Structure formats: structure tokens, C-alpha cells
Image 1 (cartoon, one colour):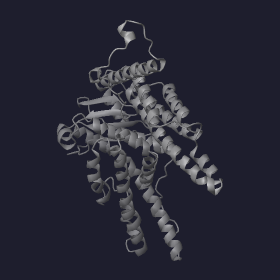
Image 2 (image 1 turned 135 degrees about the vertical axis):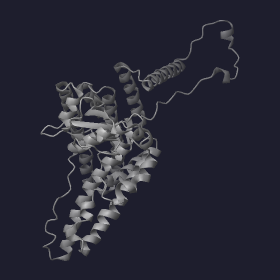
Image 3 (image 1 turned 45 degrees about the horizontal axis):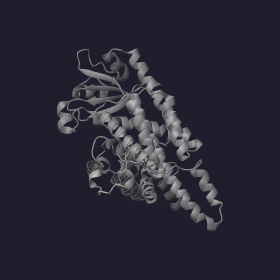
Length: 449
């Protein structure tokens, strides 16, 4: 949350001297008016709350919170959430409310739409805050009881009118977390020896004498090792990988019920010179974000890119041919933008926003067939290299419009940061929206604020 507001300070030395009343000078009992007592009591409680909150934040900074302390801190932040973002009365279902507005007489629609937009913005911010609260709770205690997370959802639902679909989606995310959590705990228990566990997950036998540290993250087995072995694990091969350049990566074991793992390259030069990340914690958070995004994609059912351009070659009508091609390329671009969003949100954890904006071109637009060049296979489609319609349409949809969408989306994210949102809050506000909608979503949120 964006801070707990301190009460105004009271300094007796700044008050001008007031003469005592005759009753006070005679030592008589004077009753303080009840309203004034209420004001003093309110100020006292506010000061007490602020000091308690400040103490909890200090303990959090030094890693000294216990579960009870953390729960109190979360309660303080929830009250701040209610002050910053007014609750919504009753259930607010965007789909149902919009359907009602469409059936209203024309003269009533403008006012109804204004109320709808305000509630939509407030609820979207509440949904994002709810996700942040859930993530914070899991980060503090990876094995927090499921009921406690569901209790958080219920608190937000009661204040911001989440409908049944929104509650169900949030519960699916929670269940997805525990499903993954259970799998990694089971495999860790089954393979107590680190080397055996790594071999089970990756198929690579690093050797008993190799230095590695294996730990259990929230939804993954984390493997910290030096660059040479990180390269072997990346290639899933025993052969040497010279000059492995990645700070870390995520993968999964083979089989019907895969277990996810994260490998962090602990090469000293790479950590200090290449990434300015001595412990590898930024790389770890980057890979964790990928894992969370994968869970979100499973819940919100994002579609993969189409694999065939059906009907284009044999179509004779130019207009129909154009429609077929535009539909295919637009669907392919949508899938690529989803992958770009995954990488962008992960990158925000291991580099600054200015660094990311500076690197956008190199990441996504240089067209060098790098890992993040998600549309190279369509730009370089040999079958259509001499097809003018394909080349012209491809340049417009997969190069120009693709670049514009990504740049505008990151620019909109920057607007949220400028308004005081944290990285976690801003990502939570946007994560269930496609990149193409980020600008519109941010504009509406900031208009309502």
C-alpha cells in the first residue's frame, strides 16, 4: 500500500498562552465538553495506531515480524485501502450492470454510465489490491492455510462487491497455488539428496562433488549453482556450456504432472558485473513472476497462436483473401503480445523502468531471431516471401502495430508508477488485461481517481 497517513502533529510550544479561567484558578472542577473529549480520544487513538503501524513496518524491514505481527500489519493496510478506495455498496457485476444500462432510456444512460465507470475503476483497483494482499501473505508464509487466503477474498468481496465470477477466478488462482505447492513439497520429501532431486527434475547428473544449493520456493524448486552447471541444466545435457550468459531461467520436469524449477546462475562475475544482483534475488523474482503469469494464463484461458493459414492460398476473391490473412496475423500477434506481457512484467522485478524502456527495442523489435522475437517465424515465412499482400499486411500488423502496442503499454504502466503505485500494485492492476488494453485501462483508472 502507498503509506499509512500520520496524524497531524501537536506541539504545545506553538500554542499562544491563554489566561486561566477564574474557575480553574480557584481550583474548581471543570467538565470538558463531551464533543471535545471525543476529539481528544480520536486523536489519541489515531496517534496510537500510527505508532503501532510504524513499529510493525520497522520490524518488517528488519525481517522480525511473526505471523501475528504480519496479520496486524495487513489489517492496518486493509483499513488504508478502504480509505483510499471507497467501498461499493452491494454486488457489482460489470457484465450485468452494463446489460442493465443498455436497456435504460436514453436520457438515463449518461448518469448510469458515469456511476458504472466509477464503480468499475474502484472494483478493478480492489481486485488488484486483493491479489497483492494474497501475494504478500504467501511471500510471508508459503504454507499459509488456504482458509486464510479465502478469508482475504471474503473481506474484499464484502467491501467491493465482487461477483460470483470474480470470486471463482480468485479462488482458482489460490487453488492453483496450493496444487503447485503440494507437488514441490512432495518431490522434495521424496528426494532428500540435492543431487538426486536435481537429476530427477532435469535429467542431468551434476555429480556428487558439484557445488549447488537447493531450496523450496513458493511454487518451484530453486537450484542455485555456478555458471557452468547452470548451462548444463539449461541445455539438459551433460556436455559443457561455455560462457552461459543467463542470470537464471525456469523450466519444468517431464511427465504428465510436471514440477517447476528455477535455476539461478551464481557465477560471481555475472551476478555483480552483468546483472548488479549479487545474491540473485532479482533474477529469482523475475522467474517467480513468470510462474505466476503461467497460473494466470491457465485461469483466464489465453489462446495460443494459430498454427495454419487456412484458406488463404486457394481463395480467389481479393477482399476475402485479405480478411483471412488479417484474421490469422492478428491472432498470431495477440499470442505474441501475451508472451511479451509475460516477459515485461517479469523484467520489472530485475531492472528499473527506465532500463526496461531503453531495452524494449533490443528485446522485442530488433528482429534478430532472439528468444523474445516471437514473430520471426511469420516474418520469415519462406512460402510467402514473394507474396506482396502477405508482406505488406505482415509489416503493418506484426511489425508496426506490434511495436506501437508494446511501447504504449509500457508507457501506460509508467503513468501508474508516476502516480505512486508500486511495481506489485501496478502489475496486479494490469495482469489480467492484454497489452493492447493497458493504455485504455490506465486512462480510465486515472480519470476516475
